[in-house]
Length: 246
Ligand SMILES: [Zn+2]
Image (tube, rainbow, N blue to C red; front, side, top):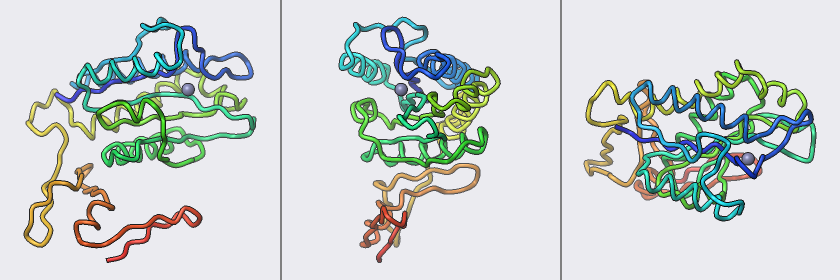
């Protein structure tokens, strides 16, 4: 049975970002995280949390805070780590949803994209895309990990949304929906917890290219695939273009 560790950002001594009316990030993300966990558990996945209340299990120290979150994820043997946050910027007009992954994890990148797509589809906020993020919790967790920034709590309109129970339900449904699809419902039994097709290139079984099957579509990590074919993938940041040379 797949295990997911959910990390509601901040908590206890650390309120996270605070909205114009005083809504605290730590309270919003805890509610969303608990609902996400409930949905995952009811679909048969095993769920652990870095915190389940406003109490954190560590002292008021930002570094120990992050170290402990990763320790919990790593010790529970989670297959996937999802950290839930609200965004904040100096610009009060900044808005939208974005999701981060760690560069070394192809699987993290795939799931980050699926979560981002689902959140954008469900919430209808601006698509700020998935991004590589050098966050401690993404770097120091040993399993694929994503960090999602649901919306900007410092933006007046988005703070209002984040305060709404129905909005939070939608977020939890979007995140849990993707993870259940990806890891497969544990209650269904079945050996492979998520469907991982075998890849054969020119008659050779290739095991170092992450791939998965979701809703009948096959996702294969492009860079590994192309390098197995002897080619090269480049990314042009300016034009957001993937350039494949074979
Ligand atoms: Zn945060």
